[in-house]
Image (cartoon, rainbow, N blue to C red; front, top):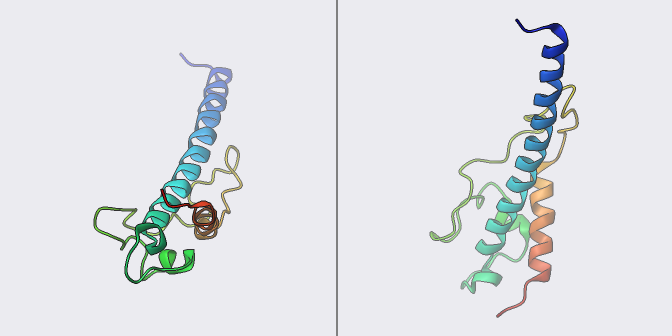
Length: 114
């Protein structure tokens, strides 16, 4: 038989695991999407008609539609609050597109040709 104290303790453990996993998923999604967008950028890839800024890679017309060998997520990032839990991960109000665009801009700004 499981006691109330044991259930509450198990909830705390699961909540801590969830918070860590949600934060890592969020960070990895943003970083991977930004790297995909950076690698799709014509200035990086040497394409004939390069997009010149993250907006051109991240807007709805281009998200996920880069060179065929660089694939990205098939859908837009999760909506703000999608990963939220009121106790363990309450502040999921992140602007996913904004975070991806900012990370992409950082990658583009630091890019140097081989």
